[in-house]
Image (cartoon, rainbow, N blue to C red; front, side, top):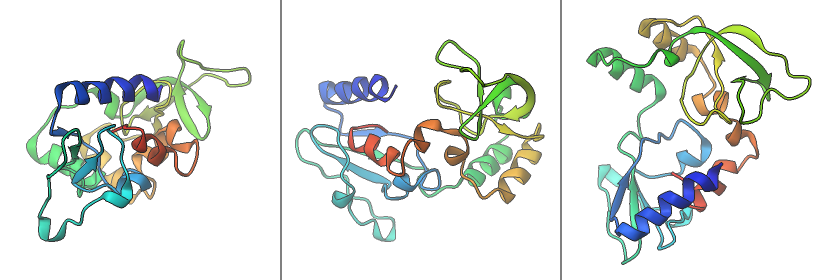
Length: 192
């Protein structure tokens, strides 16, 4: 799945010669993202090298780059999942219902609740059951899981997030569970 995302992204960045590309990654999502800077330098192959990340002292950002290189800019990098939800509540932003608790047919795999589909599930021995779940992040069905939840309002989601100790990617992204360095490996290849 990742080459299907990464290759078109990096090819487009190189073809258009973009100086900067914006993303919504946050440091609290995953260990590799904690190494990311607000301005993250990528080489001429769109690859990320954590050793080449520049210091960001006093919120000063260095966007300089050589021809062929670019920066990935993560303006929400210092926000947490709770910050995002509090912002959504304060601004009255409407979200799709998938982010709130609802009844859904799911099956268990690797400690997550996945939705059945042609992409690969359920497999033999995996049973579909109806559960009250919500999605903390939305992505590819082949790797994005739901969590058990009764949080069907924004206030309940904020209360739920305030006490959880598991990040949304840690709780819901199968591709991050492949190895300790899975996300960092993908980022080195050009993944956002």
